[in-house]
Length: 524
Image 1 (cartoon, rainbow, N blue to C red):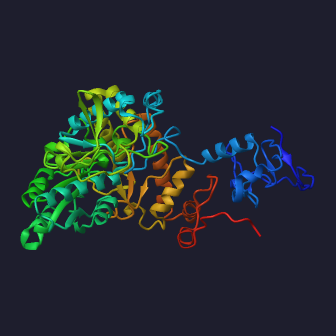
Image 2: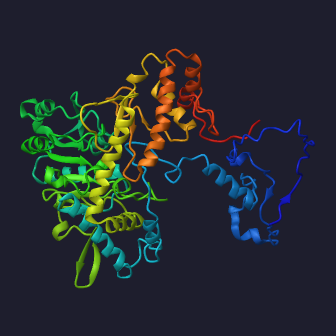
Image 3: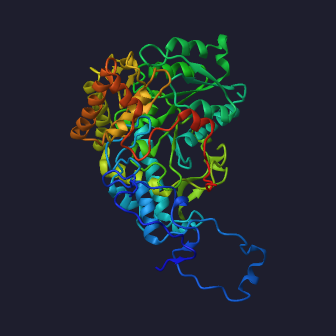
């Protein structure tokens, strides 16, 4: 394609002595914003001048000012986005230790199946008679979700974990209303919970009351019992929202007693299923007394985060809550597969429609493919390997770093506090930034909030021992250098300056929060 240029400014000759640095490191190219590239008075395509009078058809829609976009040729545009992509860490590049999000490998088999005609090109408004295979797949997915969780019903429409929380709490709200218990206006949430738990409860209109955590990182059973006691206002509790395994990477040993206390108080047990990958195939949440649980398909069943559109957070419901599931859901009758979208029959007590359509088909296909390719024994191994890998990391690092809860094994996440950095002058943030220079994405920082300077590492089940060792060797090297900062000022300064090898340096966090630059403006 020819570049049409008007009034290109002349530039002085460049010599070797005056050549500016490229900003590139090795094969990693520096790249400015797209607005800072090229000229504003050129275009990458040849466009003929419009015929006289052609603009009359557009009326007042005719543009009267420049379009405000930089002109780039096709190679320039492609290179811009490729260079930007090099700035991102990716699961296809190295281990992604970001605990609480489970960035694990997305099998290419799943991707291939999701791109099959009939799945990839569906439209949500197609006649249901033309999407019979897709509806059957959705029904099969719900079957296996119910089988794996021991629950009675599945709601597929939620688009993510927090949306699934909303679905579960709306079902709980509808169930209490049906029993004439509208006075139940409180939701109990442990202090270590994901932030979406109290946020979702408040969004539904519930008051949130915190449950204390014991010294072992688990729910304080005495505090929970006290807050469920009618004498202390426990009669107003609608639900308990609990993550299990919890955000400290620990299994709640008292889970059966927690469920018993919750149900005896007339409340429902909502389980945050974010960490289901640690117990899938090993434990059925329904057997633990759970009434509702969302399942992050990206965490347990390997679908990408978002997948280029809405994610997926199906909700499984117990027999007590199944009648209050939202519409629509997949049913089969004499005419074939269809969506039940009306409040009739089994759906008569449903709380209504949660979203415009029925979820993200691409995520359903990927998750179903993952289930079928693994089978029962493979899914069980998913949980076993996730727990094994996390404990391996804990074992390899605990002589240098401080485990938040040293007694006993962890589940799928290894959690460390910043106590080991005392007297070094360094923080969790400094250590995390140095990990970037070592070629790894930082772990989750400062979460959960119940652990000081938390460093949460989740390797997932998809990492080999060789890759775990590669990661641990890098972290151990950094840890040894960080500990030397107690006496070595130069080492301390290296951590404070990190990252120095990344395309961009550490930003001023305070200034960025107080005066964020959200829009590019042309320099004066």
